[in-house]
Image (spheres, rainbow, N blue to C red):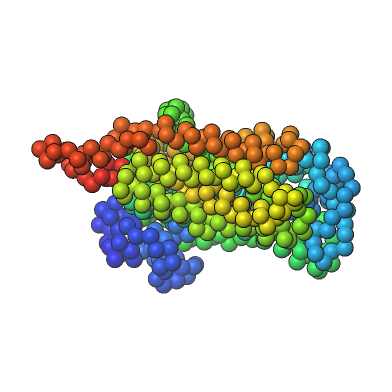
Length: 512
């Protein structure tokens, strides 16, 4: 228990002098967590409410954001996009229905829709730092989810490929809930556990991408079991994420708050004014921020691409039915349950002994092995082991993808602390931009079904090899740890500044 000075509020978990939580216990609830007594509970337990608000906002955002992806084998038939008349079985209990294995024009339209599904998110993430600084995390999340609910409702009535592209473009703004996810936790948790907290919040949020692969086909199958047509079934399935958003927005509005003491103020970041265009330019021209943007594009961008293509890949290339393909794709997203947290935990662990040097090594190794397993996945077809082998490789690939995402945002808070909102936003935008780049460059025009994965692995490896170039004067690099010299220095040289008398890693631990 700890008391907020001057506020008379007794917090339910230990906090530091900035009232940020020094413990991360996401399942430690005291008293009612839902709507009853929200006014009192959100003041005494704001930290874990913020964590769950940030996490659920991002998790549910994924379900609406990628609702179309696992249903594309159905949607492309209903919209008349197919340019061949192959016949496959979409569900185990279905009679065989006319479907398609996309070629040429069909593949181009689906690829364009997949690019659109991450394009608007690039812009909204980029500028969301300024939006959060103006409205605070709670209102920003509520605005994004409310807009998403409107777009998803309208998308149930599309009739053509161009309308599919437009719907997926506008709904992609939901991905920007990730920026809120990471920024909100930075306001609530001490920097020494922030890698773990942000890794867990981001990972469990990304888990929504895996859940979508199972939930949407299952809901579609449920409507089909009632005797509804293929067209009506997938359209009614879109109601599900809308209901989730209505409930969550109400909970966020009434049961959470921006900071430990209430409303967010720009002064909490050590600034006197909100971010402007010049601040974005200054941040993005820092070469380390630029490299982190591209490194995040290599991991989170890859995850978004796989969320778009996995179900169709298993249906088209391994001949599995829609529900089974969704279950296999869920194994990819399911690694978010622990792997992104593992990246954050590993980064915090390495930092405790080696400072920023340790964080960078864990980051590099995660990206390196991600590239290796992505290349191997691109070598597997029916003749080289079939879907069981592909699934095993996919799981290892997913673990390293998510670890790399966790290690990325374990480093982000230390890059430019006073511009945390902007750095979080532009790095997040880079992740989505990576999906746009990869889909356009590797998946849209290449007709071979496996070559795109191999080409994509080279992209990931290239940016992994840029990690050794990241360096800070006070925090070091992969090859240099300035804090180590301070520890090894003679006692006579350690008398002056307090900052130089900290443990090996303390010089890195900037308060965010």
